Amino acid sequence: MRLGVPGSRRAIILGVAALAVAAVIAPALPSYPLTLLTQVAIMAVLAMSLDLLLGYTGLASLGHAAYFGTAAYAVGILSTERQAGFVTCLVAGVVLATITAALFGLIAIRATGQYFLMITLALGMVVWGLAFRWVSLTKGDNGIAGVPRPELPLPWSLSAPLPFFYFALVAAALAWAALGTLARSPFGLTLKGIRESETRMRALGYDVWLHKYLAFVIAGGFAGFAGVLWAWYNGFVSPVDVQLVTSVETLLMVALGGPGTLAGPALGAAAIVFLKNFVSVYTKRWLLILGAVYIGVILFAPRGILGALRSPNR
Amino acid sequence: MTPEFWVTQTFNGLSYGALLFLLASGLSLIFGVMRVVNLAHGSYFMLGGYVGLSVVWRTGSFVLALVAGALALAVVGIFMERVFLRRLPGQTLGQVLMTIGFALIFQDLALLIWGGDPYSIRPPALLSGVVTAGPGRFPVYRIFIVVVAVVIGAALWLALDRTRVGAMIRAAVDDPEMAQGVGIRVPRVSLGVFALGAALAAFGGVVGAGFLGVYPGLDIEILPYAFVVVIVGGLGSLPGAMVGSLLVGLLDNFGKALFPELSYFTLFAPMALILALKPTGLFGRT
Image (tube, rainbow over the protein chains, first blue to last red):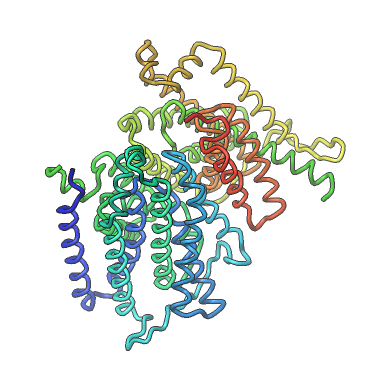
């Protein structure tokens, strides 16, 4: 059995090449494509964090926006009401998302199969409900506007699009490297083993619950990292960031790109971000098209883009 | 907290639970027979409400609205099962993505057809008004919902437990391969159950349009309630759906009355509790 080493090497080369190309062409780009690329970098972090669960551990979470949104709200509230800076926002966002995932994981990981899916969806809706109704804290449906970008001891201000793009690109590259290292570590290989056969891994003496739980919490933490970046990028946090459609889009990014490849879901994130913005130029019917994309992916490319490209080798 | 508060809120919770039962029993049955978690189930509820609304606008008949809503969504359910879901047996992720795709399409189509304004169906004169008894005031419409849910629940139970078709459904739930082996046409049973589940949800949507209203986003807001009901009660179990609906209806109603800002949070408690005690739900197996 191949544990994906040659495939993952190709994915690494592809990913590094994509990062390099993006970094080189960025200064030449007009501001609109540049902001789209920035969105891609951030959403790629979110998609890769979900890939740790879906692709490596085999857990389909339908509430991943909960951790993304929790962190975004933490940044929004702390920076507008407490004037918190870079480190405070980053740490608070990631830690709060991780705590939320640690709490939800206790409930969700006990469940298996379709129960897991339904529970993560319901837990995600709990967070959405708080964002929507706890108006004194979250400003409800109006959202939190005017979230400032952090000041760093750098010669460039992050409020300009190009420096912020490089900032997001470096952040995405770091997250990719961290998740990739994790996926190739003995821990990551154990997760893959659990995905293939839980009972076998249990018989081999692995603590299956603990591995799944840790994967869930780590994925929540990285989703929180993406949420922090998103709050800074967008300057605005609202219930849209925690709604079901956001969780579902993330799931599609992973499924579209090819679960269990990290680079694939990042590619899926790029495809969805570009498609979404491209479609919205011509029509308001984004959800209709997204729905059709879902059905199309399942019918025609059930193993994702990378999976479809690689299919002759398997 | 006055006695009126407790009586009124308990009754409101009861009637909300009755509505949830109409929604969740179908979801649970569909899961039982096909092992499909249908994320478009909330859409059936919303679309049922919208179809009922259009029928009431055209004809003014509430009964016709109930029938038309249920029939229209039964057809939609048959289409989804026949043409799409049947291609993905046993592929959980594929089924999930497929039903999400439908949920998104339905959401956008509803927005396109009925627009973004909230509407509600005005119940017929017979069902409006309030009954006063002791410390409580009980809207007739909510009493009607409870009665309807009890009648449908009893009918479903009798049909599943006492009829030949019911026995076939139970056989298909317990062991589809074996059921197929003894000559039960499981695909046909699946199709029937899927249509019935969609029709029940849509029927609930028309009833619900009388007091929740019908508006864009209702589908996604109601879906987690259906999920929590079947998580608490156990997937594929009719008694589970009954008990789960009551529990969730009551808890949600008291939660909303006591802590309005934390409303959805009330869904969290029953799930956490039940999963700590029995991960497969009160009446669930394996």
